[in-house]
Image (tube, rainbow, N blue to C red; front, side, top):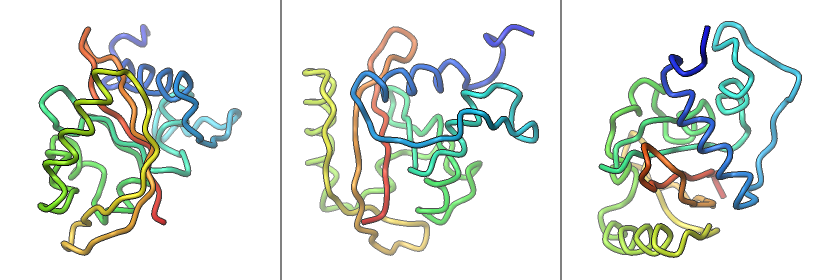
Length: 149
């Protein structure tokens, strides 16, 4: 079967390639494939990463996430897909976030930052994130690796 037909696999590949390009620190088990998740190692690498991984489309909707991100924010993975990524940001930081993302896309840089995000219960969470651009359908979008501080 061609991997072109696996939903989200191209996004996963692009995000992983961008993580490598921008030297985002992440850890994974190279030799583990979880057949309950996928027969493609890249998908499992992404799903099982110890850092939360989020990728949004050009409209700002989450298109890929992993178990660590879902646990950090208190959601099921399926609840996060299609959710506006800005819903994870306190209202008072949303405008600054838009400006930061615009700069990251324009300059094609990775930014490491400390910040505050909001979980499903509305509680604020201190986080550290590595935010970087990735290619999605010939357009740059935003992805991040994220951990609780």
